Amino acid sequence: MRKNKNIINLVSNIYLSPSNFIYPLFIVEGKNRKEEINSMPGVYRFSIDCLLGEIDACLDVGINSFMLFGVEDRKDELGSWAYRDDGIVPSAIKKLRDVYKDDVTLFADVCLCQYTVSGHCGLISNGVIDNNKTLEILNKISIVYASAGVDFVCPSSMMDYQVKSIRKALDDNGFHMVGIMSYSTKFNSSFYGPFRDAALSRPQFGDRSSYQLDYRNPSLAILESLKDVEEGADIIMVKPALAYLDIISKIKERIFVPLAAYNVSGEYSMIINSGLDLEKVTMEVLYSIKRAGADIIISYFAKDLFLKMKGF
Image: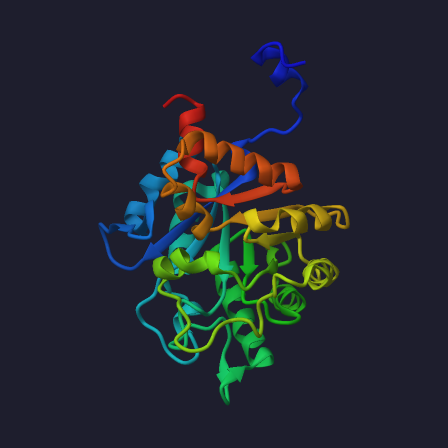
């Protein structure tokens, strides 16, 4: 069964396809901006005009799904630039929808950490996260993104009942066809460091342990995903991926909606800077995520992976 590569390929049953990847993109204000992120070599922040070239390159290798993150300098207590019609993410959605029509599937992260002065994922009241007030803001963001033409809103703040609240807000405003991909099992992880540099979203005090999951509690992690399915999530997500392959596998056994895994910034940077054979290690890592049960992989490696696989 391992006599040659043709036989090995014939009997293998796990495959990587560009149609099952989502490529994350960081978007900034201005024009003619393509800025490499120091802690994530090969990953860039793009102004909207430069974003088009990156998407064209992805479409050339078969990647047509994109996760949009706004990087915002204009921060305030309420994160108001997250839900303005002229904010960076809704502006990008409108432009991409105008240029690419339905040739791209657009996912937009719904959170406050990039937009608040605190750097936290929710609104602060008396020094703690106010879950209910945060839900109101997440609803506003979701409606603005839906109005701009997004396909999926992606709540990542880990507020209780965020999926139920957003689903109702979308439906009440006529956006029945806008889906929800929930960051349902998002751990309080050290692997997010480079992302926080990229998105200017480091918390200015404390940490996120009061709303993100403790990695020592797998039962609660599984329960969170099951709850989000009950609340109406169309796709659920485990984040990070590599240290949580067991969680991906256990959740996959219990659900009947698509499961995404986010191969996060720290995992990317760790591999890029490892000194190992980059192409082989990348393949091994992504196959491990797929093998664990992920239907969808969100990865900064996606574009370069399929460029190499297609021989560009």
